[in-house]
Amino acid sequence: MTIAAGWLAWLLTLPPRPSPWLVFLSGLPLLALTSWLSHRGRPESWPVFIRRTGDVHFLAVVLLGAFGVQFADAHGVTTDGVIYFSQLRSVLFDGDLDLAAEFAFLQQPPRPYHVVPIGPTFVWFPLYVCVAVVDTAGRSLGLWTAPAAAVGLTLPYVRAALVSSFAIGGVGLITLHRRLSREFSPGVACSATLLVFLATPLVWYMVYEPSMTHAASFGFVAIFVVAAEKWTAVDMSVRRSLALGGLLGLAFMTRPQEAVFAIFPAMVLLCAAAPLGARLRASARLAGWAFVGALPFLALQAVHSTILFGREEFVLVGGAGYLDFFRSRWADTLWSSWHGFFSWTPVAYLAFVAMFGYVLRNRAWAIAAIVIVLAMAWVNGSTADWAAGWAFGGRRFISVLVVLAPGMALIVWGLTRRPMIALAIIAVGAMTWNHLLTRQYHAGLLTSGAPVSFAQMVRQQAALATAPPFVYPFAFPANVWFAWRTGLRVDQYDLLGPESLRTSLDLPMSADASRYLTEGWGAHVSDPFGELRWIDGDRAELLLPLDLPVDRPIRVAWTSRTRQLHPPEPATFALVINGRETFRFTPDTDQATFFEFTVPAGSDLWVRGFNRVTFDRAAGSAPLAVYRIAVTAELKTKN
Image (cartoon, rainbow, N blue to C red; front, side, top):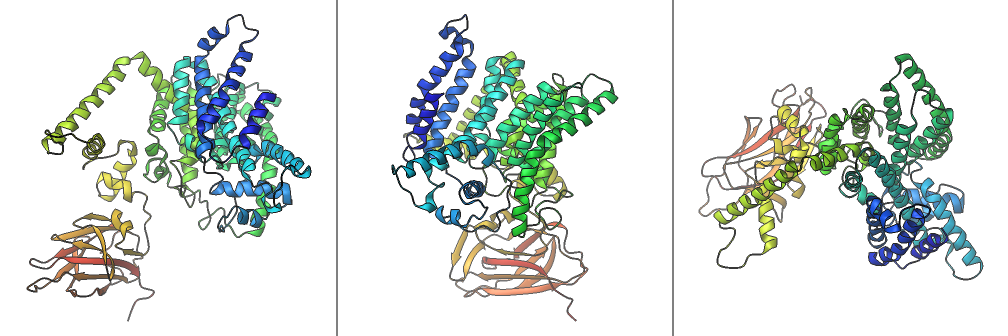
């Protein structure tokens, strides 16, 4: 323990961004010493012990390597992590939750609000306090100095927070691995655990952005779920019920959405082999005592929230608030290209599907996992920022990886028992690769009389594989459902699926307009009048997501011009909305021309959803440039 503490203290004082190899190689002797001490007292030799527990040793080496990468490449405290870190410092050193000084020192821009849960600060607290004690003693003895504003905010303090998040995430992975090892072989369990870590957003939030809540909440949830499976029974003791409540309280305090995992022990009890009355009584008893166990953490969070809500204008629940549980974009949180959990993390999607087969092995776990994933999707989809803002992948679903892990293990186990399936997958991949090469060669994309760049060849392979009508398989069934209800192509779900219907829309032809443009548009360019798109063909179409009021006139306006031709030619165009011509116009050639017209109230021209707006060019007309188009409802009907 002393050696480990000394090694960690040395790491916290390293210069910024040390080599990951320095951290990794310096930790290997400590890892070896831990292994040797673990084998002492056993009848087997140390080499035999290592071979028998090779899966655990390999997982430990991988975590140590990831730990080294964190020291080299972690982004420090970022986004909401700045608030958690600043609040911890402010409470300990200033005795308040006023973050102005902390934000100023960290050079953070002002935030619209600081209403967040307590977050991972409970995990950070022990190591952060240790750093504070050493720092205070060193400054008191004159060993080093620091301005008052920097105390609690310098690199060793930041590293204490990041290391603590990584540590609890690592504990969660090891706990999960031990649970999988009791059901599957060590190799299968290790493979599934590594998939949970390295094939999901968890690796990002443990290594690169550990100041967010997700590494810590994953660790607490893993401990809670494994303990709940082991302890939950009809005759469960009060002590274990209190402990489960405490574990869930920790997870809730870190991320309130983790309250959803209360479903897990409830499902274990409901699936138990006991009379229904006994199961219901046990469920009520567990809920009561677990609430008592969680109460200290709930009270702490309540005090924290009361302070924040008391000084900031922030509406949490309701139609105008952050959460609206009566409406949810739950499917988009799973399958959207905007951080969809399943679409960004295919292994989680496959594991979720595998949980339906896992019902035959562990009914309680499988049903709980399916219900928890769907409940988490509903909760996440009910937030104002359902896509989780600037994030890597479906970060709000990271904790559900715990309950999906057996599904991953089941897939790995199935492949080891039926190696021909794995070989078939490899064979299909090899044949597909060769088929794409033949297409490249046939199209003249590869030369036969000169060397070829492998980088270019691989890029062209990817371009061919994703050429229209490519449909992303891990967005199913949301993409098919989107196409059925909107009448659009399946692949248009990728960019248009996350769109909300607008009561008005002003669309400049900037680069961001690309997702609304379907066919007939040229590249994004600009001229002295602004950004534009040329229409060189006979027609060009765009899709506008609208939910317009039917009792008000709708104003349609756009700006356009034509290209000067020699000799001059007439330029006549028509604006077609949902297949009906509504306006004919002739723009100028030397300047941008503004056009507008009004659709009367009560018109059936518009649909609730994606409206097709087409610019049609008459035969012989010059090309048309469009700068912007706007659709708005008039405030009142004109007389």
